Length: 393
Image 1 (cartoon, rainbow, N blue to C red):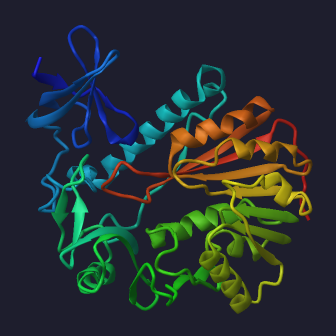
Image 2 (image 1 turned 90 degrees about the horizontal axis):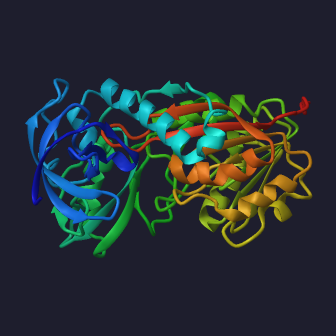
């Protein structure tokens, strides 16, 4: 059973494809093939409950498949969805999001989850990233091959905005070897690398705001679509008296929400990001925002929030999720709404379960196509208790 001819049935989490042997046994394939395609695959692992394989040839391609515009697409693991039109990608992601949400919540809670989700497409399919990571070797940029540590020389990445792509080639000549974070400003096109202490200017014109993170700090790479995400969150905090933003970063949600909410508390671990949020708030004249340094992986978030008594919480944790410590938030007596921003639906649903078990319900979901040409997605879950009061100004 070294080689198999397989019909791709559907996609599962992390963009992998699922097929079946004649016996019904599941075969998992690495990203890059799509439902309805017939492929020749090579077995890489024979597990107890499934087979893992890598596809080596597409025997019967999808009618929607197109040539990939990047010459590195067969080696780089970054944009395997680029073989499909953007609209087709988004429909696959919508189905993937809904199915993985239900699967991760389990049978008990899946029936209470929304069966539809609002979808926000990316305005640009290529050249949309203003932040990215590269591997520097011999003074030039590289990316890693799919599923390995092999370095692939990358003189240009079609996901990077033009200022970022051009700056990448220039900056890498002066950077030490290893993985480096690069960022460019949509405001003035300037480019910097982690370790540089010149802020990246990120405009939010709808709120007369400009965020100022350092190049090594996290911010949403798809800055144009991020503005739709910010608007989505801000509209659902507007009018509330006390809003807290956990994992606040440089103020991406906290500061816009402060323009329409009563008081806002932002919790952030990274000192540079927290300082950037303070500076941006002062520049905008937002005196109803307080920024507090806090490591949410090591400290109890409910303790930090007790004196603030939030009515609404915004959570945008890292990909691994917030973990068990977030359960303590259930002790906050005035809490009436959670707005949970997620780049990993599976880990987020794991963290949501204690809230569902305590009587909270998912009222709304939304899917933001932050990462066209890849399987990655950004989702938002809005939760409220079964019985909740008005709680507004």
